Image (cartoon, rainbow, N blue to C red):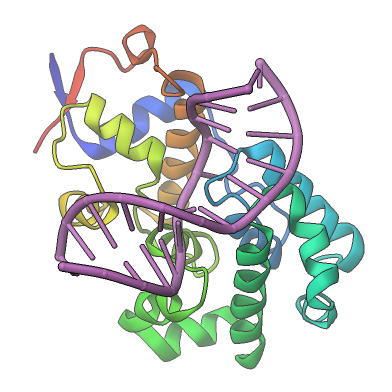
Length: 214
DNA sequence: GGCCAGGACACCA
DNA sequence: TGGTGTCATGGC
């Protein structure tokens, strides 16, 4: 077993897999939509819904808000949980639009309370809040999704059974830049798709034999 | 035909 | 605070 730091884990992933370019989207509104569509669904289904919404609205926030609930639900349907997700899209975009879709201003206004504000929005839970902080508001945070939980457990970290426990357990090293934090999350998920799905074959991966320093 | 995929929420004790 | 049921689609 070889001990590595969190940042060393990042460099191993980056060296082995290359840049991911995450979050894969052309605009921040598209990222918002994607972050909601991917909730507890596979990427293919989520992508169908994202494409549907893009074709009709070009990811213009006001155009999305102008859709009737039925129209929006119809576009979201392939991603599953379409009623919940449609409501979530509407709540987040309404809130952003009330703030003029000015992400820097929003971050300044709420400062350290931004995460708490995001959690008030319907359909935004712990993970989605962190995804928005990371990719919309460009703050270097750690997103402990299912793949991160599985990976860290494989690397010997205990107490990763739920999001709150994991957030207490894992904070992002201060040396991470925003770009690195964004890549880190992308790399973890790309790694997860390759080595942590289903039964998982972590032991066959290039990270086998490592464990994270406490 | 059951299982699973980058969660969130309401309700309960 | 923590545990459980519910929400839905599509690929394998």
